[in-house]
Image (cartoon, rainbow, N blue to C red):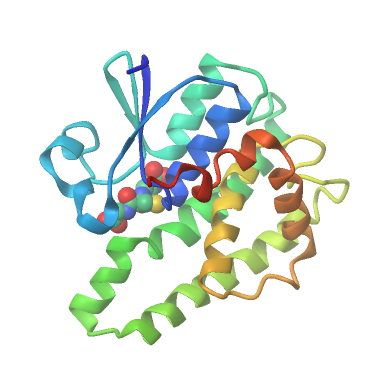
Length: 213
Ligand SMILES: N[C@@H](CCC(=O)N[C@@H](CS)C(=O)NCC(=O)O)C(=O)O
């Protein structure tokens, strides 16, 4: 076991953000699988390191870091290159705004526990849950496409290098495709996603590459 351990689930988009960041920064780590479909996230051992009962958690020399964007912040402070946020306050604000469209406004109302709650509390069937999912993804990504127009040079969301918003975009588009959300009319987002996918460090973080056998 290495000194840096990611408690991970192959299809977790929050964990996928962290995997991309670790790879881009070439940080060596080992992975512990937390099977969300079996409810392992709420087991005592996971709650001991992640009191919310979620993934990801990055355990560094025995200290548990939670919340994917806080983990990215720690990684940026500890392994500065390549930087995921700029030192320029205006640039940084734009990067965080784009990241938070996904991480604060799309993802939290679409994760597993929310979809389960819709079923348990409101008897939402699969069709209703899928419609809920698609609604918030389309609304959020449509706004993000407009926001990305502020940095038209690309190919990444913020320009010539990946930043924290690209870390959030890639997993969200992976999920959008899984759930059949139309994204072809979002050329700026698709271009950034394609540029990310072409980087070997990003490709290595793809769910298909880390899926347990
Ligand atoms: N804001 C948190 C979100 C973490 C989160 O929602 N993780 C999901 C997987 S992407 C999870 O563990 N879901 C388990 C569940 O909903 O029961 C972060 O960015 O780390």
